[in-house]
Image 1 (tube, rainbow, N blue to C red):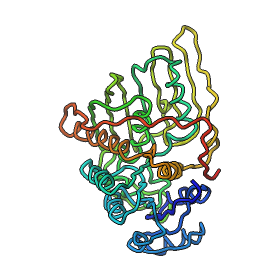
Image 2 (image 1 turned 180 degrees about the horizontal axis):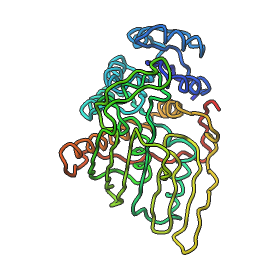
Image 3 (image 1 turned 90 degrees about the horizontal axis):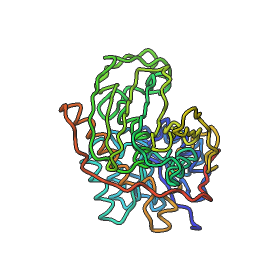
Length: 371
């Protein structure tokens, strides 16, 4: 593909910094416009990253230069902006989750299908060197068949780093919808589609207080669960324990481990692109061994968010679906909403959707982003 895809960014908040830095470094992308409901924010980002146009969302969607809209708005606005972009004839890559309900998620996929457009969705961390190495190890069969797994995401919460943390504690937020997509997406890539789930949840603290940034000292009510425990059964029969929480930190639990017939795979934090990747054979007196990463495109501490947009641009050029695509994101959303239904109703819930895990990146992958 010789001509880069013209990109328009909607939503110029905290996460847009990494996206714009990395997309500017990709030869497959050309950021031509950015928009935000606060125009001054869009203007500041445009100046910072040399984006030619800062404008309203409507103006961005009318631009002939914009072929792909990168939707970085808050979760409750994801469906509205993505649907508007598709109606305007633009491909869409959205931050996670795809939407906050499966009904809205299905509207997005149907709108794209009816107009011949592509939908991509974060997280794209599974395209990083760490998780791609894990996927290739599983594909090689050296660890045998997966039997079970565990995954833990417990941290303090966003009030110690995000300038506007309140929406993380409202419906559409919480640790399940905010950080759960990283973990569930990685599990689906490793283990396949999910069959059914069971969940329990609670609010750990009724209020939270921002302790940094422009809202430091401001207290806000919590209206969505901040501790979610789920049991997930995959179509393969593999069963997984997943725990997500805002309000617990300092633990020493692993990020994710896959328990296989020949050994254990220790998966790096799905919120990042790097390693380490470790394995331990199922043998007496065995020990953990770090596995050299088989990929090198995201080695290092940098935040490579936007990698999925670059991969999507390549897929569009080839007439293919992106690896971080809509069907995967919809299945992950369906799993999360099924977990919510389970802890609300107190029963197992069958997951309605299905998907095929994306193919491995080639070992000579040539995705380019900033380092």
